Image (cartoon, rainbow, N blue to C red; front, side, top):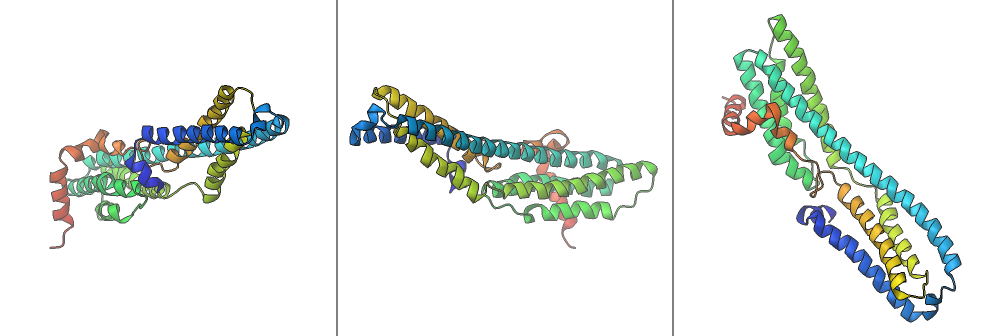
Length: 278
């Protein structure tokens, strides 16, 4: 459900619903409570409610801060993984220029197929929460086979061959890390703590009575707005590949990899002819 909302609604729309809805419910609840229990407006229990609200608010604030920082760090780590994978693939493309033409062509075609599969096939799967190794497996295997069957003859070829093998191993490692990140989400216990805590904190503000209704509503709406915005951050950061605030596949289209998008159709056809059985 969360992935569907992230992929079908803009962050602005989600913010209006989350923050505006939380504030609206809080204001309505506060007004209804004052009408049902007029003694609340006199603040007879403000001392007890204030202590409870302050203690609970501090604990809940620390928990929310921890969750948001953790999710933001996860988002940054995912961006680093994607950038590193694209960089390693681009370095292989540059190293391949030192190899004989047949090896260069095979490696170039497999890299082209790989970056196209990542962006056009694997990325939509990750956005939907269903990462798959199979989307890029054949292209990565073809790149390994191109290097495994190549026997460098000169010192120059050996140097670039070692670099290409190292970078290709890194691509495989970063791919696994990227797909692992795509399948991660906030543990159910932390989700219950983050969203369930709001169901306790916001209603507590209803009990803190003030004589003037406008002042009390301003107090309740401020707390509810802050809680709603914090929960929105938790919601949109929980899935690094879904929604508007997500990791972009742009690194696979830039630098040395840009050539595979300007001549992508020719390279794909070449790769298909090379890997297809006679």
